[in-house]
Length: 131
Image 1 (cartoon, rainbow, N blue to C red):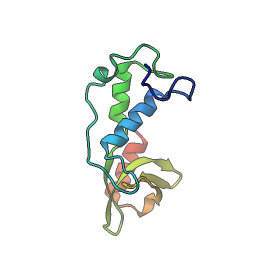
Image 2: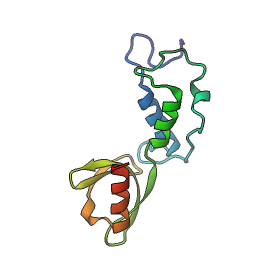
Image 3: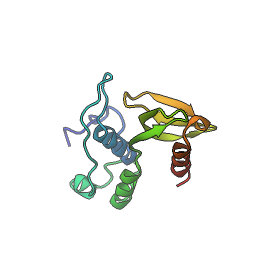
Image 4: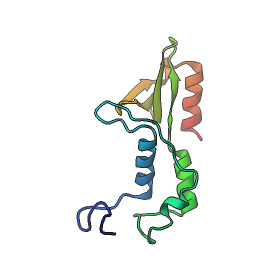
């Protein structure tokens, strides 16, 4: 479509994974310039969002039911507590060695030693890192 971004010949289209990640970022409140917006939601039925798009719209596009599964797997913000009892809100991004990578509400990424987390948060890291 003429209105599609990026304009024809001006870059590559987002992959379906990237579209879902942007949708989740917006649903989480999309912090811009340090100010977080209102929380939204991820649609339960992704097929309605993509039904009018022509086949091959996304690079490496999976089937719609796979897209719904991916959307459900996109990490969301949750509470994390350290061994001293301090709790923060952050999004789990992954594990790198002995650290957990968390995206803070302002969008910054923090690497935090897993050993310094509470036992409950350590268990959550293990659960998320080993689905």
